[in-house]
Length: 314
Ligand SMILES: Cc1ncc(COP(=O)(O)O)c(C=O)c1O
Figure 1: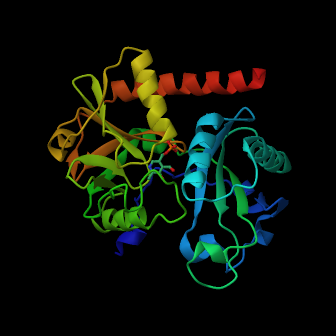
Figure 2: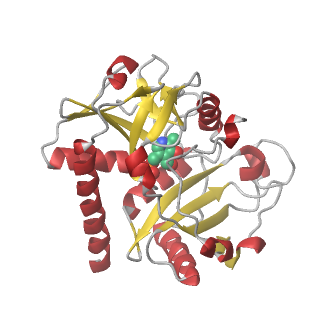
């Protein structure tokens, strides 16, 4: 069987099928239109070159969890590549609010906010050819991560594709071009796993193709130094809840040797919060119980609740 068709394959972004998503409305440059009518030009810089930045966010009780942190990353990324957002955070929030209202969405919603350098005058690379302003698109879907993943966990394979040095394409850019991660995901799939575990240029364990990666050893939580991975909002919040609740947490270099021997391993990302890892390169992780991740998951849930409730009182 083709590995792509593996019946039992799973990813950290698996969501329960929701037929309402066939009829969602999408924001495209100020217009909110039915999904089938939401289109961008074939000359768009995002389509042609992957020249754009995006954020994945979740809506809880009508509020965007960790909105400020997502906007910090988004505006920093855009500034770093001289991509003029064309509005401020309030303008972005207004576009998000309008899109959520048009869809009648308040909870269990995932959003992909995307900004590209816009339509190019000619089909070539130079940014100067993007002359008509940026393209802003907001896709919001009803989305609940599948429950089964919490029990089953994700199977990781270490892959040949590594994270790059910051002077090539800094991993901190949440850019439209994710080819490095896509190649890693393909390699993992071809190895019979669900997602890729990627090493840094020195061979230390770094991150996965779509999420940040943590291990638990003897009660302490370890993650990479952060040098070659996405500066994940969920990663930062997991470190914060550990520090605030007396759970030892270390940002350090470590190798596969320590990852294989971990008591627990889990992934973090806005979509799935914390997702357990069942195995790495076919080696089962721990004994399948995940007390530390379960505690962190509960503390993170409470932090999200506090964050959205604070926004309600702003
Ligand atoms: C490569 C990669 N790692 C990690 C993450 C998780 O980041 P966050 O926790 O901000 O969703 C993402 C999400 O965009 C990502 O693309």
